[in-house]
Length: 202
Image (cartoon, rainbow, N blue to C red; front, side, top):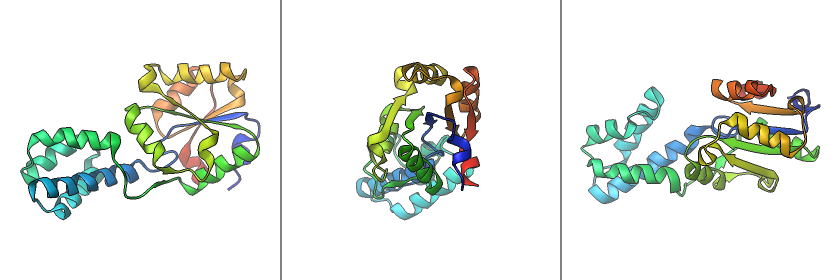
């Protein structure tokens, strides 16, 4: 992979977190595992079938109504939705989150070339921070500057512009790496070059 083609004329690169630097499912499936273990301990319901059901539901329909469907399937008291939600924010994962290999290589190249690395991530700030803390960064953590758009209550485009202003850069000197249409739209609002993370995996 020749990442130089993407960043040779850039001074900084802005990344989203989920499905850009690592698979979101690597976090969620571990949360579901921990929740199933919690239910087994609290309610003496076997964790194995619960874990398998939650994995299948997630793969079929994503996160929407996952707790409700699981609770209905296994007769789990609705009061445990609080614990389910809390685990998303503060779970201590059995396994560290691993960066996509090509993204790790790209970020390491950016550091060597003295280019700045930013993460601008949407979603619950506490949950996103928990992911960051439990990611194996291979020493890159000291080079990261992170913004949580939901916590700041700002559109990503405004945060992108602030990053450019703080570094006295024009849009063409930066790059956004995302994984969804929203990130692309926010980038286009201020004429920031954008690529889908999958392009870097080729």
